[in-house]
Length: 190
Image (cartoon, rainbow, N blue to C red; front, side, top):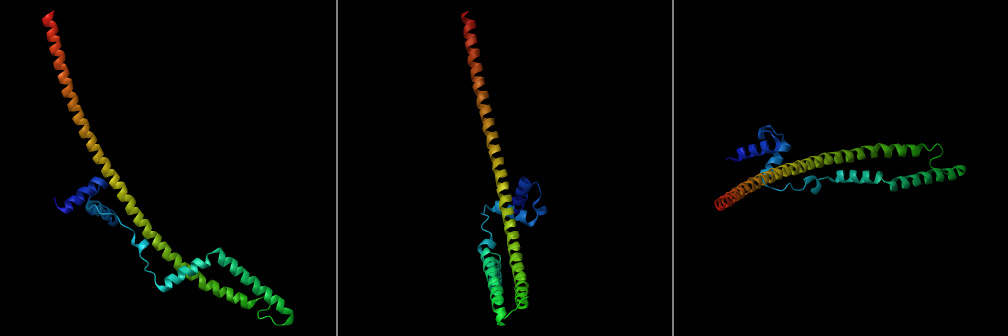
């Protein structure tokens, strides 16, 4: 049997489809089962192929999305407003009410932080998609392996039942022969 015939037989047995009709993920699972190779770790989980800028974006997103950032940013805002209000009567405030410079800084921070967080989220979404595909491969393989084991257990059970039936038939035949012999002896005596 050629390797292609083996793959086709395995895919028909496990998925009820020809190997050629399977999608890439299903083919990879059938290949792994046929090779009896482990699925392995997802390369996305193991490898860190992020650039410096990617790592920086992830750091900014991690810091910008934390309670520590919210608390410290609120403290800086309160200090800014408090300092400018306190220095206002002496005409020493560097950003008098209505705090136009503060609004400019807040807009700039928001304008820069939002795309950086989006970059990090997009990268995480891509990583999540790859992990979901890997999980699908692992789950599909496990399901197919379990089905394969069930088929083997059913075959063993059928073989054992057939053997047990044969033994029972032989034992019954021996018992019938013994009963017939005893019946013959009883008829001869009486």
